[in-house]
Image (tube, rainbow, N blue to C red):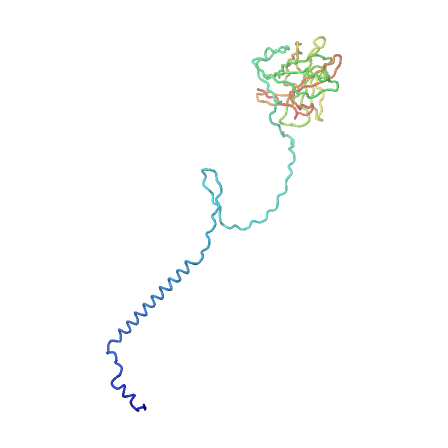
Length: 330
């Protein structure tokens, strides 16, 4: 079929598109705006939901470990240890060990030992005892035994036959002693400063124990020995020694010690009164001085030898007051 010129325009004649009525265009724009607003809300909601799911799924940090609680005694509030991080402490150098020297006695001071078994007491009796070798007035006085062997000679035959039980009393004038001695053989031939070579008793005094306590004797230390005699021709007697500045003992005659003794079936009894002035002591209740109570034995008739010494202190040494006991006036 051939192409007919102008026919194309003719087909559209009377068929122009219909135009919107005048005044209705704003509704179209309103509808479009509402649609756009709804679309924006939908997009925002979707974004929120996606973000929420992502955040919930993200891993979280582990909780901090529990803080340890210090152990406390029952009924006590627990103490919680601090979690703060402290700065590092500087290194501490080790402290050198200090060697402490043994205690020494300084001039005018004394280092005294604790109470020991060698401590004895002198009591006040209702009346001063009569020095006659009988112990009838001593009923209220405690007794102390010289039961430790502190010396024996090479000639000792190992016979344990000597015991001595002491009682002590005092008043303002004298220190009194009453001693019961058990000894199966009595031998005494000596007097003066040799009394100790026969059956006899000895007392040692440290009269200034708190002032110069040490391992040597001096002028405030005294040593008195007592002899019961031989109960035949040799009378009772006593002798006094005094310490010197060079640590030895020297004769100190001129004392006023009174001594009496009586023979017994088991041995002998000896009583004595020692004037306080003979040992340079002013007595008072509670006074404490050093003392050792000793007994000597000689069982070989016709000899003069100290075979055995028994003491009331186990470690008694002649010129070391630290090895003596104490006497307290009650």
